[in-house]
Length: 593
Image 1 (cartoon, helix red, strand yellow):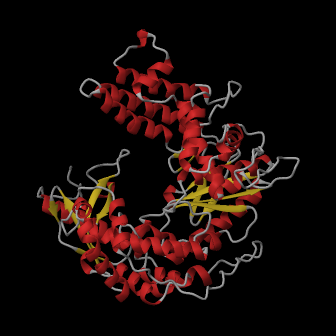
Image 2 (cartoon, rainbow, N blue to C red):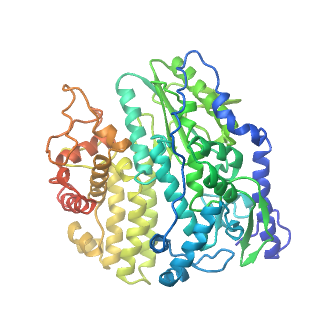
Image 3 (cartoon, one colour):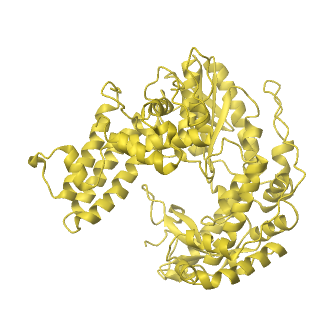
């Protein structure tokens, strides 16, 4: 690795030390402006900005009579957890790789369960589990490798700690869901939630408001080192609000306290440095604790405002509102941004104003004040890597995807001279198709029949298809002049054409939405008046079609999902995920390519 710019000693030990100091000092600078930690936890409840024009923020739900308690683990539950751990060669301070626990789980499950249960019963998290080895991961994307800020600190913890963390996370998550503590506007780090669901829900809300003649405005916020600035007392107070008290609260306090980290650089470890804030990136429990930290963001910032909403994916938080005029929209967005700033300051989060994005559904010049910064609307908004234009279409994102697909196809072509076909197929499905299919139900509109001619999409989707076919020729060692039919070429290579791959993925997505009636399902299958659609019955014993969520927008992801639900033979009757995937795969082979 290239040494950081500020390092003057070529000794890797000095570099590791310098990198560790950079990470520690960065968090110290960010948290220096916070209120005292004892005051942080009350800010989000008592210091809400007064606003006569917004409805009163609803009170918290009444506390349940019962409090959360740990469930002791058994040898069987330990075995299940160990088998599901990811295989990795990275080792924590114990220098025991995950594979050791997996190979010895039959013998070790009982003793591991005893260690875990002693921790859970005493409320004490073992000190050795609190020691992290930081692997600096280069962020890429044009970053300067000499700058220590171009690296993301990923914590490698002892493998045994992951077993204990998993047991606590599973029990705490079940409790939080029972309490209704985490709002539906949060889509990150939760089972049966995804970035695709987040984007599809938000896009539907935007276009629905636009279709009714409203002006829509979207504000996307970025938090600086959000996981690393969490204050322990603030988190504990929010856990108490979820009826986590007694030994479990003591355990989480122990988990958060007295942590140390060392940086590994070119096989050299720095000396340990203490941490005063944050949960380790790379931990099992940390992401859920972060969701607890920001669970009240929606209630505080949005309240029950009828013309505003929030979409959060972990620490990516996006506000959006609609109004009858640009002037009213400006007032509403500035009011919401003031609330977001106040919430962030009270919770111990640092907003990065330089990365705040603003998009409006109008080409007119539009600016708003966000704190002390003046933010101008841009023609494109990037959320979770997907770019939307003023019409909330994903054309800008698809153009970049076509370029990336061609670049990856060229890379696979060069590797084709030295790799066998079966390895090329595996590589292509991961490197090329994995990139293409990320968020594809939202990013790429499926053509269900020959009459679907989506303007502004056809040319760019053809470019992506060309990249897939070029890769197929690389795998099969064929040439364009061989004039092999596309269907035969793709079948021999083990790849799928673009529309088939996206259609199959989207069909499974809508089946899950219907089965679990998650936020996406609530938007696709919600009740509408008889003039708009006939609502499908909530069982799988019906073949009634559903109407489009927002008629008149053929490329809207949820409209396409509704059409797929009405079209795929047998999908409405599929009772298992495996059956849904099989039906989707079979149907997708027969639609236009």
